[in-house]
Image (cartoon, rainbow, N blue to C red; front, side, top):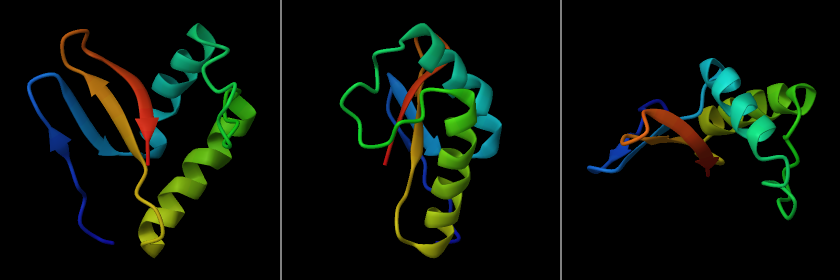
Length: 83
């Protein structure tokens, strides 16, 4: 898929996951170490997050998956990801 998709309302904005989101997602995982306790994708460390993002970007380009990051407008920060 070549077109970027953005979903937005007055509370949140979802945008395509990109390498530039690495620091934001690293911060979330460090603040909430148990966040991924039941997730099939264990990307809670910096060394695991880089390949997770790379794979997500590649899968989006192939049209297999569309990973997004979630931006909380009221707190002006990224709060997670979805796919």
